Amino acid sequence: MKPALQPAVPGEPSYGAAITWYESTARQRIAGLLDRGSFNEFVGPMQRETSPHLAMFDLPAQFDDGMIVGRGTLDGNAVLVAAQEGRFMGGSFGEVHGAKLTGLLRAARDTQSSAVLILFDTGGVRLQEANAGELAIAEIMRAVYEARLAGVPVIGLVGGRAGCFGGGGLIAACCSALAVSEAGRISVSGPEVIETHRGIEEFDSRDRALVWRTTGGKHRWLCGSAERFVDDSIGAFREAALALLAHHAAAGLDSLLREQARLERRLVRFGDCDDALHIWRAMGAGLPAALPELDYAGFMEQGAPIREASDDAR
Amino acid sequence: MTLDEILQSLFPHGCQLDGHDGILYGQATRTTGDAVQIIGVTNGVAPGVDEAARLSRYLLDVLERGQREPIVVLVDSSSQRMSKRDELLGLNEYLAHLAKCLIYADACGHPTIGLLYGTTAAGAFLATALATRTLVALPGAHPEVMDLPSIARVTKLPIETLEQKAQTNPIFAPGLDNLARTGAVHQIWDPQIPLAPQLESALAAQAAHGGDVRDQLGLQRKGRLKAAHIRASVYRLAADAG
Image (cartoon, rainbow over all chains, first blue to last red; front, top):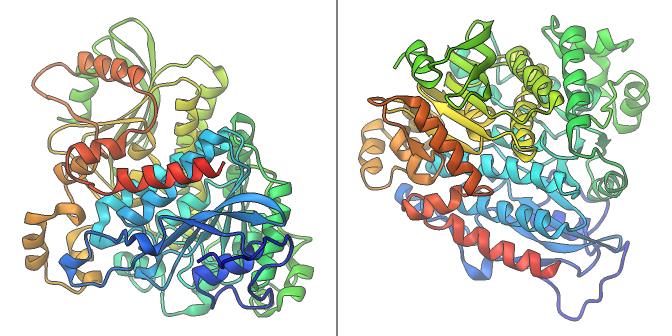
């Protein structure tokens, strides 16, 4: 909620910069990301636009359906913001949840607004309303790319408890640029889904170290899948968002061709690797097994010289 | 209909397709004499990083030539390939890149038509059929987000209970009619009559209607009663905020 009579103060969010992004709620993240008192929510919980499909499964609805959208300012710059609440139904995309983001992105496209920030925290499609959720993701992917073609940067921030899985991973890869923290796992098929379909020999979902080095933020950043690797704090995500607003890939044929080259190069260089450790070694890491253990500063020092460039190729 | 029957009915003047292992690309001649480009994920294949990159490479070659031919996307796939290697290499980027190539093609004036004639699911569905502007299907096509046994596991409900619930609200249940109700599928073609004129009318209809109309279709078909209204409310507020 917007606090009454609070003037917007650029550079001074109302929520602590040192607080962990991972442990925070979607509303806390917005409060810490944007300038104090600047956030104005659209179709907020007071409107009680809940999912019409959960009652059939005897599940409680939430007044915002786990998606918060609105506008605010980031260091004085007007931005549109969408944040997923991973604690409600795993941040999953349902009919209402998805429609809010589609509306926001289409408005950004048509008014050529300055930028859109998406705070991902999602397991993917909400299975209780799977058809509506899947189609919502398709509509959002199209709306993200159309907004970018209209010149609006769409910046994704990934570091929540639910990660960024399923269709969420596809939407993230449609964005102009991404910032990830170590906890920001990005993938299509989740570890449990792969294990269920292919067996524990293919992927042991309970091997946490394996899961994190395969889908986690460190690996994604090293591969060039994300532009920024950030420490797990709201202040770090705010700084990364500001940096990415200043520099991001423009949509169009040039960046698609560069992305094709980037993705083909990855297949050539790392297509035969069967573990992240092998990929990191092929990149030139001296002690690949040590990378997951390093703290932010130590990892940046080791990782920055060897990582694959993102090349504005999105 | 088999793929060969579909191709003969769709392109009676013939088509030249390359590719292997279910991943196809090439071109054909419309009954108007104009060229049409084709990509396909067929034969129930599960597209992974390698397959997606081959299809996007073909699309980018088409886009670089700038002829603005229509692009037909043939789909009879599995789900996306589920493997450790694909996720390790960033499958989300490869699938999204393929979808972006199709969305960009549409924006540049290449009409995009998806033809779903078999199964498809989850991420494979998003990267191909659902990234076209007009999605049509043949009767018997079977799209699904996730199979009912998996939904049963996640929701901890017996399959019989889910089948019962699907009678009143099929929003979660697999199947062409259920997906069509949400607005995901624009039209179901008639396999008893030639497909070529049906393609021509789909192209004409697409030229007449701009933009993504799937939430409106979902409202008209009573499959997504809230999406269009919520989208419009947020749109109005965000656009007013400027």
